[in-house]
Image (tube, helix red, strand yellow):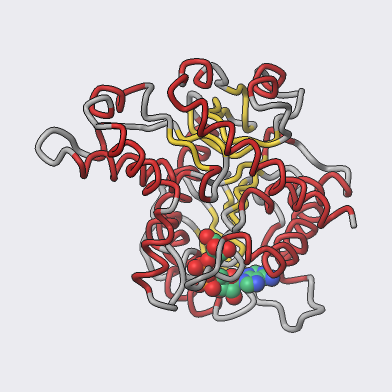
Length: 335
Ligand code: APR
């Protein structure tokens, strides 16, 4: 039985993400929660003739915790795109105070109603919201670091697309699976173009073009914010990316394990965490490729950082910024 709950299902990301989940034949139940408009979204999706049984949950008041509890009960996988989106001129970190409270309250609901679920965090700033979820689950004594995923997949999607765009007659975006490590905001995003399938074409670029490409991946979200002109940030591409990671995790429930990059807690209970931490100056969170199995993260594929010598300087900058972002999330819960 696979039950997936989407928290923030009526939003710009939540709706297309819920649609994609509704189309997945391995999803038995799709549970939609939001503080607005979710009955309409649920009714609409429920007419689609796929197997996933769809239900929606709307709290009757700010104090009502029953709707969230009912939405979460029995979930194997919880995806969180709830929050407010980025407006022009806002960085992801400007969103912090609003989204931090939303994510804390939703995590409390997860701790009480679905403590064993795998949790995917999309709400930004991911570098800080993932520590907020972890600290909230810890407070409740139900934290399992193998089950918490910060979604950074959009950075990989963009890294693949933007490289292919530079070589229109030689490559397609699907030719690559660029490993992107670090975090999910600006210079914390480090695409490792110099290793793997992307290496051959990347090496053809001048130093200047390489710099431009990396900058485009790191700040790709701004292109969407500007083009939407006040209407929000990436929704469709983010929904696709969030779904891609959710789909991999759902696949890993029933068959062989998969490798995906995710922003995770480098807890010593995870295979490879001690080695990974050494490579990132002892940070508690970092995005690495990980092996995912039925119970979540099985192993961190940390070796990629040893191969990526060309990106050493970018990694140093990312580690420095991430230290502050992570501390901010932890401090929000501990204060
Ligand atoms: N519980 C559940 N849902 C909530 C809550 C809450 N406490 N607070 C807000 N929401 C819902 C909103 O009602 C809305 O339907 O979250 C949804 C967010 O949707 P949008 O405003 O359209 O924002 P979106 O573009 O989807 O971005 C959401 O994801 O990538 C990040 O930066 C982005 O943090 C933002 C989040």
